[in-house]
Length: 197
Image 1: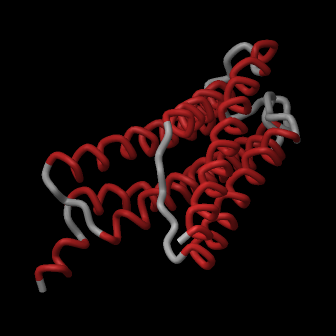
Image 2: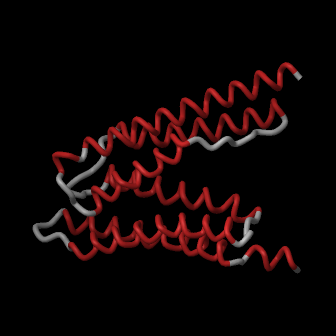
């Protein structure tokens, strides 16, 4: 019974709330994209999509702090929290690359982000299979990449200077690629260490 209660603690409730916000965000982005095809885009939808994305992003920091501060770490949270983050970020990047917004990401950006994530997931399964257990080592470049991706997404959602979009996009892409490379290097080290055991 105690473990069941721990699954629905405050930190996990915030994570679930963030997951529920994702389809709301997706709907707002799609509907705004549809309205942007006409002469009078519905700017309220754009602002609401930015607000929902901002709330979901802030909730990520809040649930992590609560889990650490009040010892509410659970297996459910360890799995669902990063999954919620990935779903939010990938849905935003994909939608803002292919919907009819005034600004959008260049095609190479979602390819880079999705490719990095697929390689990381595939590498983790491969290492777990051959090494017995995959150790996740967080690095500041990964956190910087996530923050930079959020900034680039908000740049589009808030319709900031279109001519400057390339700079937050390149910054996010640089740290996305760098964090992916470091994850790959760490995975190779773990495989080598397993081979020597």
